[in-house]
Length: 133
Image (cartoon, rainbow, N blue to C red; front, side, top):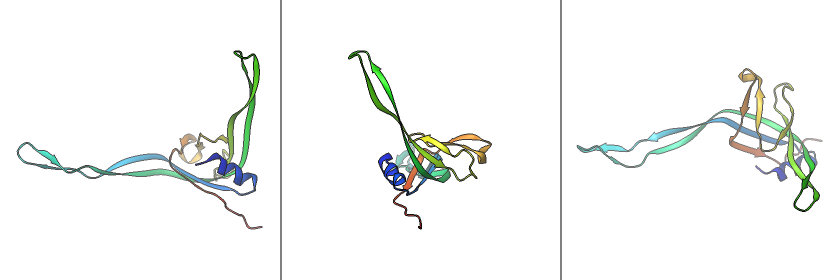
């Protein structure tokens, strides 16, 4: 995921499709064989990840939050970017749509008793979407 890609697209009126999963489980596909009297293991454990509790939504706005901070070592104020916010349309009939920090992909899910769900696994983005004119 790249904030510059999201920023460029939404500034040019192109929405960005975002998706992620809230949970990840490591599943053992194959275990080593135990052989002999002392039950030595032969082979390796093979695993794969299973992602669950996924959701997809649309990012269609960008906002840079800036501010000033004071550095007493040089007795000077500096202007800096504090955060990059993306407007998230969660697809829950307008519930919880709003500005979210780019690094925080969490929503208050009405599907899970209004609990906070953090979509940190298996994140994907489809960009350069051109809506019909």
